[in-house]
Structures are given as C-alpha cells and as structure tokens.
Length: 456
Ligand SMILES: Cc1ncc(COP(=O)(O)O)c(C=O)c1O
Image (cartoon, rainbow, N blue to C red; front, side, top):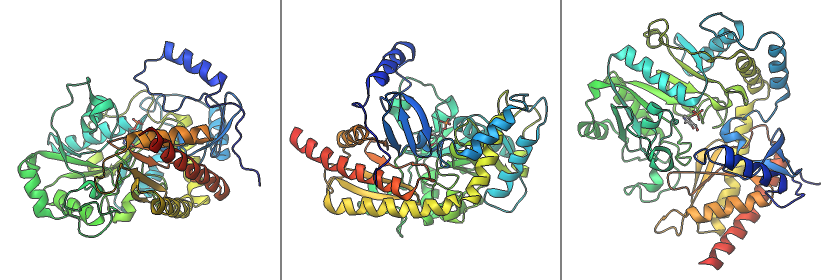
C-alpha cells in the first residue's frame, strides 16, 4: 500500500525557502524556525507544505493537536460558533461555552472535590495565574520549581523555567521568590547510575527526610505557596517522575501547607495514556494547569483548582480581554467530546507501546540510544556519545531530525542538552501512518549514525 508521504521537491522546496527568506526579514530570529518548511494544509497527522510535499507530523504543533489537525468536529464547532459571535470579553458578558467548559474541566480533572476553572490564552499565562491564586490563598510569597522544568516565556513563567540558553539568557531580572530543586531525572542521577525508566523503584530523592534536607538549604517551607511540577518533563526531555518521588513530594507539601500545582500543559488530554498524567500517580493536585491540546489548535489554557483556593482572588484579579475566547471554548468542548467518543487516552496507550517497542529495538542496534522512556504516547529517546559516559549527543539528534525531515517526517527534539528525540504525533494517527513515520525514523537514524561516524 502506498504511504502518505509524498516528496515532490527537495525539502525545503522553493516556495518554503521563499517564505522563510521573507520571514527572516520580517520576524526576529528569537522566534525559532524549528523546521524550514512553509505549511499549506494540515489534516489529521499529515502536513502538506507550500511545494506540495506531504509529510507525517510527529510534532503535532508541539503537542497541541492530540485530536489531529482539523478534527472535523472541532472545525464544525468553531464554524458554528463563528456564526453566532466571536468575541464579547467574558468579564463583560457571560456566554455558555465558557461556563460549560469550566464545568467539564472541573469534573474531568483529578479529584472529586469542588473546583473552579478560569480560562486564559497560553500555557505561560495559566502557570502565572496558578501562582497568583496560590499566593492569594496561602498569603505566602515563595514558589518552588524544578531543574529541567519548562513553564513558558513570560517573566514569572520564565523564572520557573530552568533551561538558560535559549530561554533565559539576557532576559533577567526574573520574578523573585522562585526556588529550584532537582528533578528526579534517574538517567542522569549519579546515584541511580544511568538506570533507565524513571519509574523504577528506589528513587534516591523519594523520601520526606530528603526533601526536608533539601528545603533546609533552599527555602523555608512555611513561606512556600506552591510547588509547580511537570509529572513528565516536556521540553526538559520527556522524563517521567518516579511514582514514589511524587508520593513523597505530595506528602511533604501537605505537611507544610504548600499547594501542589500540576503543570499538565504538555502531558494533558490523553498524551500519557490517561486523560491527565496525575492519574498514573493517583495524584490529586490542588491546582492543575492545562493548555496545548485543550482546544485542538486554538489558543486556550485553563487553571482548574480547589474551590477554596480559586476563590481567594478578588473579583477583577483574574481574567483578561481574550481569555476563554468563544471560538476556542467551542473548539475545546468538541475536543473533549472527541477524546471521550474516540477513546483517545486508550489510543495513546496503544500508540505509545508501538513507539516504545520500536525505540527499544533500535536501542538493541545502536549504542547511541542511551535511554528510552515515557508514559503512554509521550515517549522519547535520549541520544548519547556512548552509554558509559552518557555524554549528550546534540549533533546526532539534530542530524536525525534533519534527515527525517528530508524523508518526509516532522520530528522534534527536547531536553536541556538538546539530545532527546520526542514524539508528539496526533493521538488520532492511524496505525499505518504511525508505522510509516517510524519506518522513516528508522531509516533516518541509520543514515544519521552513518553520517556522524563518517564526519568524526
Ligand atoms: C509543561 C509546559 N508548561 C508551560 C508551557 C508554556 O505554554 P505556552 O507556550 O502556551 O505559553 C509549555 C509549553 O511548551 C509546557 O510544555
């Protein structure tokens, strides 16, 4: 059977190159161009570029289209909403799609307790607002975050973000009262000694005494409003936190009256094989932030949390002009329906097993694959110079991505050291298309390894 990939020109082709040239003259280089292609159309897991090349999308707009590009139900819902009204400003006039989405997120997110949700425009904004409500509720100033964490690019979100280049360099001063502690990154933990699969038993940081010692030299727990945690690092390299660590952290937070904020912006909406990554940990966070795949491609983010916490801010303290735009709310309601109807988390589990099995089979062939890990379909592999040193191989990673793109596969990297290859394909991807993408990845990996041997 013919595959979906069609290569008509070199990639990037002339039309893509022309737009990229205009882009370079009009848009600052600080906004990265991760791939050099100009897009004409996207449907499901397939992207058609301006030159008519058809590519498989393993990037999904960085985890935004778990339900696929232009899911028909999402397109129909947005069209229908557009015929009624496109904007009113929720703080000025109440409309049902916003209220219904809040109700649904309150029901859907972990925990049976009473909750409230409000909507904003981006992940960074959601994280900033989670910190605002946590501070308002606790009356405490400090926030604790993690090494390798990513929470966005606005000033407070950037303070919480870990990686310096390119995110933070030159952009300080950052918001104060932000304290960073190590993330349980077992593969790069000296004590774990390169043990793979971050979910293995025996995390050396997973006890409250260890956390007490850590806080003793970091910040008074009594002044901490919130701990902001990604259960599986996204931009930080697809590293799932060990279950026992999360359990210890939650107990520590509870003992000190600290709110736990789960940043599920990348892990949410089926990606990890559950609606939310929290479910893998039986974790009920005080506040949860969501964005990305919430609205199937429209800009929308949410802060959902315990009613008592969320009600701490004064009227007017939360919200904004565009937060909870009606078109985005209509899209999100259609996304949530599709998630349920099409059993997206279950599909993610199956896709994840397929992806991880392929990655592991490659690890048997290539010693440059140091680690394969992830929850559900949030699978990544870490490329290293050799398994003994675990030295990150960023150049090989870049070579693999470039080679894959030339063969018709959009692939993204991640990780503080730029050496993790991650899959964020739409979860609606057909098995045959997923397999075709993995075949391309296999061939691209072989070529990238051969080319890097030749050049060294
Ligand atoms: C875990 C996490 N939090 C926050 C953000 C920031 O989201 P946005 O880019 O929509 O501001 C991201 C984006 O990648 C993310 O992965």
